[in-house]
Amino acid sequence: MREADLEAVLAIERQSFPEEPWTRGMFQRELQIPFATSMVARDTRADGAIVGYVCWRCLGDELEILNLAVAPTARKGGLGCALVALVVEEAKTRGAAKIHLEVRDDNEAAIFLYRRCEFFPAGLRRHYYGRDHHAVLMSWSAGNLDRTNADVDKQTTSD
Figure 1 (cartoon, rainbow, N blue to C red):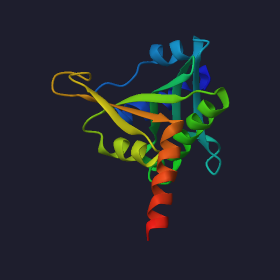
Figure 2 (figure 1 turned 180 degrees about the vertical axis):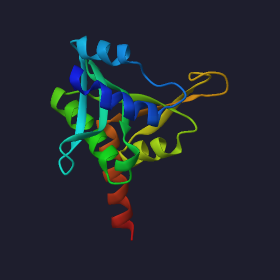
Figure 3 (figure 1 turned 60 degrees about the vertical axis):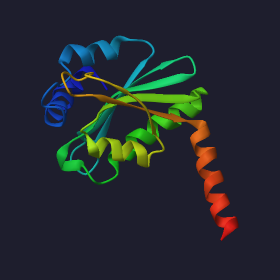
């Protein structure tokens, strides 16, 4: 993500989070932080138009996804999973053991996306998004993959 991308990013942000979108200043701050990464996804079929983005920070052996959104016209095509997979690969490359995020408890589509990407609920932050709007804390760890594979192996051998 570059400063020149922010108009398109802000349009997606407002469509995705109309109640409390990030501001230009919030994105600009992420672009300046040395341990923060912000990437955009472009539609190669539409003159490289920005259709999604993800922002994360890496501190030690943990990553935190701060913001992820896909343009409404590009949803349900796997782009959200691809953006999450990008962060997971970055975690593996950096030797990070865990990835954390918060997601609004009524954002069923996002919760479904993260669960599909091997993230698991790890707690609740009450009123995080305002009165009666809670955040579900979700985590991914390298151990999730081991446990999932072990469960599959147990089911296969017991059949």
